[in-house]
Image 1 (cartoon, rainbow, N blue to C red):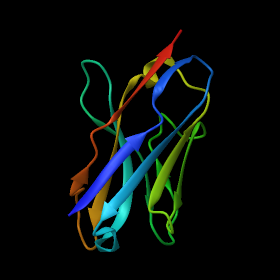
Image 2: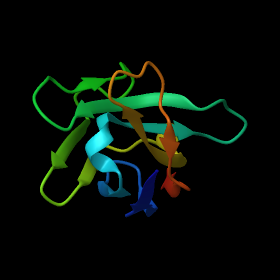
Image 3: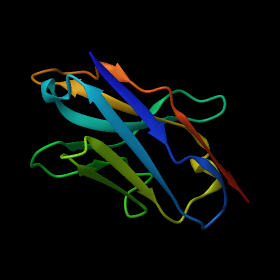
Length: 119
């Protein structure tokens, strides 16, 4: 099993920045891809960004490309999401997720952290 805990959410004005963290514990050696997702009010959960623990190129949703940056600290088992130029439409609960080696879908999810962007 893998446990994921998000932190860093909060209230920010439009144009501001926040940095989210996701700390992974447990059988993290069995995971390969880490992702960030979000679910806004009245919306379905959507993909934001993903990164591999080792190698590879980060991948972003078009809506956040150029504003958000996903990064990793493999030694500490932490994934970050730096969010700049925040917009009210970025308001959502942000979730961290982990995919097992060889998997095709995310197996583990965190509880989420709320990000609210005021206009």
